Amino acid sequence: MEVTQSSKSGLFALILAFGLLWSPLGQQDFLVRDWMKLGTLMFPFLVFAALSFPPAEERINFKGAKWIALALLGAYIIHQFEEHWIDVFGNVYAFQASVNGMISVATGHPFAAERPLTAEAIFVINTSLVWLVGFLAIWLAPAKLFPTLAMAGIVLVNGLVHILGGIAFSDYNPGLVTSVIIFLPISSVAWAFLAHVIMVIGLVAAFVWEAIPPLAYYLVLVIWSLIPALASSLKVIDIEEGLQL
Image (cartoon, rainbow, N blue to C red; front, side, top):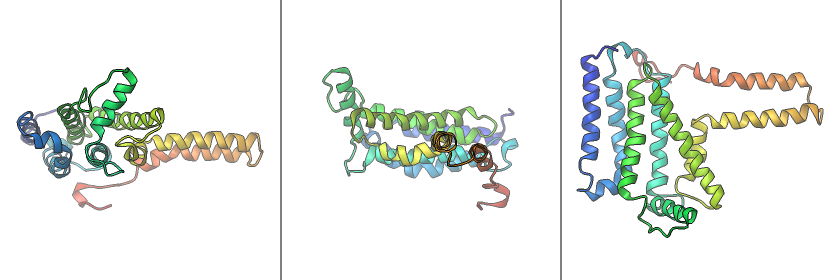
């Protein structure tokens, strides 16, 4: 890929944004404690930088992979509100103590509420593995899709960890609600889950209860299989046409 002036500008914007974000680590407690609030304000600027400075040959339209990357990062920022700021019960900054408590139970080692998952670790984990990956996904798509796939993987795995943790400990954990109502649908797990529901219930209805003909069952399976392709083919946004749905 040819390195254009706009590409260099985009890379400089990325380095500057995260350099300013990480440089005060250990010096300014408010940043380590309140990074998730800053994310809401920082997100529009990251999107602007990503869309303003793509390589010239990619400045064609804004749909498909870039929309997916943007949606994934936006969903994660919403998730971080519940996970790291205010949970559904109104508790503030409850994630750290919750995770360290689960680690204590799982290992049998009495950890304090602040360790081994420290506030500094939470800050770096979320601003690197989430924000940085999400920005790169938006900036590099559609020419390079691995960052978008990586972002989708982070969303899926994090959501499953919250859900499985809630099941294992029979308790709520900060981030569980947004994992269920946002992460699962956006990671296409909802489609896969419903595919299995349709597959099993339809199988029983057609061949055990004989409530529907087998042909109808097969037709429903084919239609459900076409949904991902039909959804991905919908026109979303074209830069040349402006921001219009």
